[in-house]
Image (cartoon, rainbow, N blue to C red):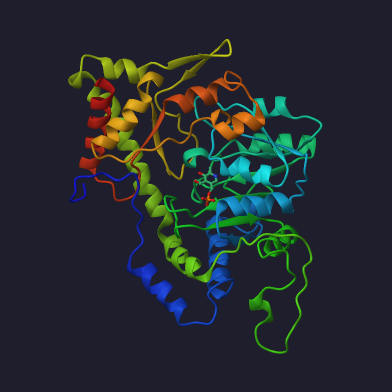
Length: 414
Ligand SMILES: Cc1ncc(COP(=O)(O)O)c(C=O)c1O
């Protein structure tokens, strides 16, 4: 616990190494799109390929394009993949609004398909049913750091000639059935936002195996111009041209310098977050009998059911685990009528909590524009009404985890 007694929702692990790396950039000419960005892109590509031999089908080189956020990375990637106004992209309602904002800013229409209630991940069967004449792509999200079923989505994308773009904002460290972000998608986009597993405050990156696509994304992240300032530095003056309409979306060298030292420790930190997750999961039933008359056990052993649109959605108290998660988030599902009281109660007791996420079609703007009535996506709605994210970061101590669970129980009982 911190000296104030507060248990933060998230604490970054940036320290002396990042400060030294950042300072070095200040002594050089290039503050953006320079050698630190290139080095980070190369190192992230190597990280994503770690441990794979050259002859494996997934061992092809990864091309990484650093961006100033995942949101802008999604914009760049969607444009590079050919999204045109009026096109439909099938995605999940259990995500941050950045996923759909990016589609809509390009004039596309997000089509939301429901999630698997056991994992909160986009359901391949629901996606298959949602494919229509205007569908051009599928955009799964690796929620909380657990990977969506990329093999199933690849098969659907191939069958219907759609692009497959992964929103991997929740981790670079995840894997499922031997598949990592960027392995089966045409591209995957990462976030280095302030609370993410690897962070520079804000930042992002796109990974793809397609070098031509990567070249286009490099141009699109820099307005759509033919040559960046770093490419033209030294020698004779060279004119640049505007080749297509792009974005201002590049990563800076200052941010890349902060990101680079985090890659070598990313897997050890994933392990530390997994240990938090293991402990939280073990604590739930452990607290049960002694603490209050079985209420906790009633809340946390049976599935919580939600009736929506004439269907019953069973939401387990915890998401089932699939594959190797990045463990970006730890979420529990509490009864819907108690959820907001738990959020305020935890906050009042000095514990940082969050909601990841209310189903996005229930948010005002999307409610007005997408017009998907409540009841249409019952699994996502049931999760969205019940989910609470608890503190999750490498430095969280054993006593803090116990305290979090005790306070969760207290707020549920209140
Ligand atoms: C699932 C998801 N997608 C996209 C984003 C956007 O990331 P960024 O803040 O880097 O633009 C986030 C950020 O929270 C996210 O959680």
